[in-house]
Length: 61
Length: 214
Image 1 (cartoon, chains in turn red, blue):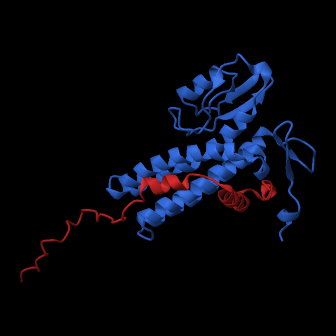
Image 2 (cartoon, helix red, strand yellow):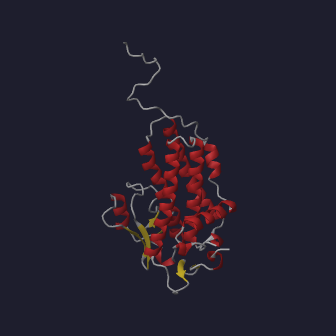
Image 3 (cartoon, rainbow over the protein chains, first blue to last red):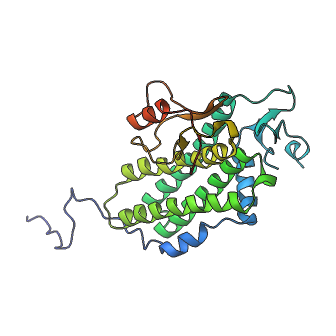
């Protein structure tokens, strides 16, 4: 009995499936995020309190 | 309200621009500060690695990854700068602007990195290795703000220090544990035994310095 034929579009077994990551963010949008303000500083202080060693938590005010 | 809202063990001494242990009345040693910087770097690296694994697992899109990485870098760079400055009250427009300029450079690198991921030329292993460089580089915000504060009239005439550890300006691209240290005769670039590149070695040899355009 003949073995079933693979469809033409089937990838080679050893070929890695290419991942579709979607489109990257526009650089202008990223650069707009780079400008820090007082709200960003509030966020950074929270980040520090979450990630610092226990004895340092709260040190930045 | 947590205990940290009521009491913090460390207070910043504005005169010496160093952290003081309120319990012992002693300055926090450079080793103590370096340990905390390493702790913060590790936290960033964990977050960035996790995001990158989620990206390659197909759990998040590239745009989500970029924005999450950018947010993590912004928090970490700003926190490190504030740590060097002694906290929120000492972070004015100049300090925020300096961090912003540096973040913009990091985001330009991130843009190219994302382009490589999108076109399939960056494997997961390569991406994980590369994202660690971004986490390690968060420490440069601390080093930069620390160095700028160390200005003394008697250091005029010394060579100027125009770069800091982990700013990517050395051959090792910041893959070192070099630190800056303040002595009476100027700022010293201190090597970590057995791991310094030629550039770091040269920077250590040509000190002591006065702070320059870091």
